[in-house]
Image (cartoon, rainbow, N blue to C red; front, side):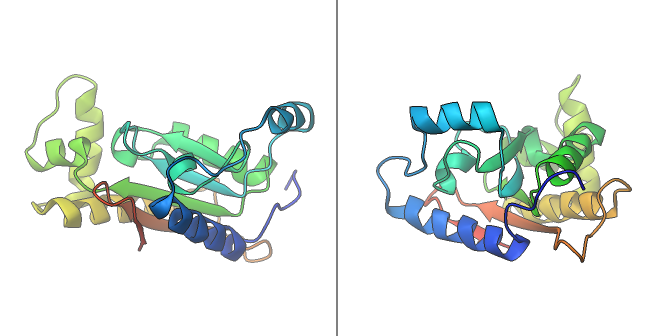
Length: 189
């Protein structure tokens, strides 16, 4: 392990949950985005307390959802929050070199990629995404249940990957969640 641990997985999960509670009543992002912090993280580097893999949907903004500022979250966004070698490499980097102990896969309800997989849609490059989701959801047609199955599949892929092993000594953990577009709440699975 190359980096110092920024906080335990349990502490990171608590910060995410508290940040989401702040977000539910906030009118603006409460995270620190100051010029001083930009300068500090530029000079000293980043120390994100959590890795968040989520959908590219423009309504899903992890830094806002968790009331986080600059350098607090290592965010990986891809339509349908699917996992492949590129995402695994990014996760491995953040866990191994930045000291992040919590890996959160966060899907969201009313996901277009999940909907396309349910209806067997997707052409060209989009088909790579919908095919991956289709494998995860099987014959499920309920949007919410399919979203949960897709998140659980990504969690399993990360957990089972060769480069990212559960680290009992340092508490590396992988968990899943669903963001609810209508009210901003995060349901941890």
